[in-house]
Image 1 (cartoon, rainbow, N blue to C red):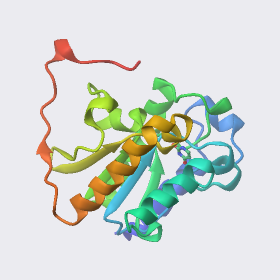
Image 2 (image 1 turned 90 degrees about the horizontal axis):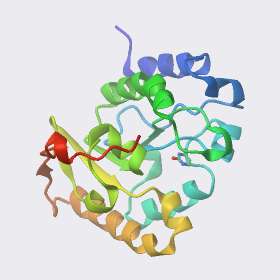
Image 3 (image 1 turned 180 degrees about the vertical axis):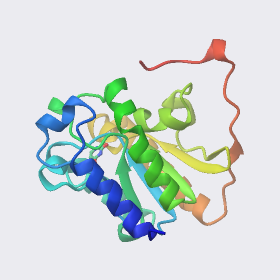
Image 4 (image 1 turned 180 degrees about the horizontal axis):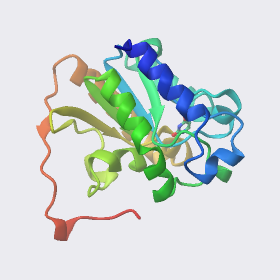
Length: 204
Ligand code: URA
């Protein structure tokens, strides 16, 4: 049986040769994700940007610098968390991921989660949130820990949103304080009850 490290590395190799969607043609490097296989917290962003594409590493540009500050503020060691994205190749001009691209990449993220088995998945932005909470609005659920099918999630705004909209910055900082409280056992998660189909929103 493969070790968990080897299983993650096998996914990285598949992503390196992936041609499942047209984004592979424009990439410099794919960005599979980075961090220890035994990470207790997994952050899932949206898609690589310019600098991530240049380096093959997640969150190393402006959003990444802000994420580093937020992690430091919450006393979370970036070396101990796994950081990944919904899609692994940069969309042109940093546009939103398209449904077909999310679908093409879905298996990679699912397999990463299955191998890492994080205690908490922190979703950054609505595209990441939509995997677990397809019918929710990020403005209503950010900062609220929720359990879905046994997995604990903590949805947050994307750091880039706070960089573009200063009014969101305080919300993002407060969410990181709440994440710290969750880790310290001072905040409890609710079981997630999806809204009835008729009330569900769709992003796509
Ligand atoms: N934004 C993301 O969603 N992911 C990255 O890796 C970088 C910026």
